[in-house]
Image (cartoon, rainbow, N blue to C red):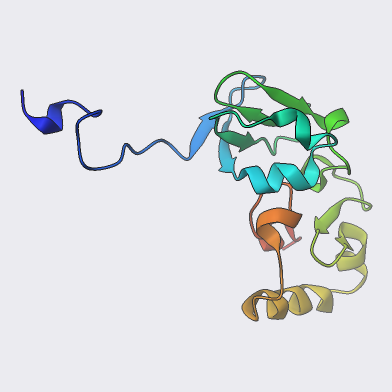
Length: 142
């Protein structure tokens, strides 16, 4: 056998998918960093130092917010604040860096430009502030 036929012997790192299906509804979910969970889980110290990968579920009909590749799950009751991606109301937070709600953007569309400008200037912290760990701009109304 060649070195490449065994992933444990290969000099190239194993690549793992950046998405996994939600254990509750089955839709593909993006991976998030532990630093993101530490900002949003009510008791992050209970996560411990497990060698696991975490994922964020943005399906509004699903109670699961975060899950890990080893079966661990956190629902909406396990996070500090309501998850805007799971809330269709005007009170839903769209931008966690600047506290912008859906209602704010609908009342003043210029807010989106403000957030875009701040993002361009790297004056945001989406990777930790947004529960998804991603930029919020895709969540703004079109």
